[in-house]
Amino acid sequence: MKFKMKPVLPLLICCLASSGSALADASDTKYHYKDVIYKDAPTPKNHDHFEVIGAGGTAKLNQGNSSFAVTSSESDTLHQTNASDWNTLAAQLGVGYVHYLHGAERYPKHIQWFPMVEPELNGYYLASNSIKGNVWRFNDSAYSQSTYDIPIHSTRLMLDAALTVMAYKKFSLYGLGGLGEAWNRISYSDSGTGSSACPDQNVSLSSNTRSSFAWELGAGLLYNFNNRIGLSLEYLYADLGTVKTAASGNTGTITSPTLSPVSFNLKTQSGLLGLHIAI
Image (cartoon, rainbow, N blue to C red):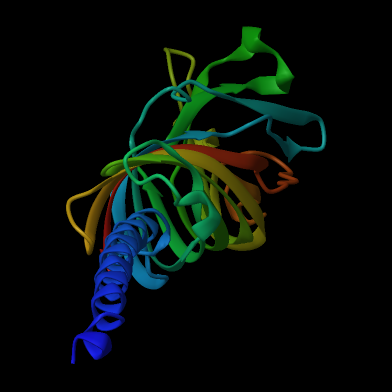
């Protein structure tokens, strides 16, 4: 009996030692597994998803250079005076697809560089109180005896791409750019100023809607309240292309009018407060 028990004890000791080593290895493996999960695995908020974007704010419009012919011998320049006024209603409604660049998500507790990109389809609407300014008759500022008013309504559909440059905790900084089509509707009217003004010679041109190529660039700051809702503050510069009035309207008592449409390149700067809802 003693002869049979001797090899059992060393074998039992060896097994216990191996088991202890295996448990230590298992503990190490478990710690390493948690570390890998913590660093590399996407959390629920980092899953690709769609989101709906709604925003509102204010904008200012830049008319650019413009002139139009009144008669065969008179061409007038329009000089905008309210280019610095933020007097235009701006609205946005769109949908985007947030795609996470997982290679940038290794260190959640630190700043993440370029962690996500988001293609977006956005619709924008602008409605101004009016572009206003002075009429320089014969293209000369010395003959500025009239003021003009140009109401503007603009709708555009844009394919945008938003790239998150940096993210830290609930904050992220992004840049945005896009191309699309704009539909701009404008009309024109002027009125005389001073004692020499002649109301019967005021000009008005009928409204006209014109479509044109549009592009935009911007940047914004996004704050995520939770995994579903975020709030953004965005600056957006857009070139809305060439706008034109109709070439017909009211010329009062002007003799032999040869009206041409008022035409200029329309640009806008907008400040938008947006709500982002993940779906």
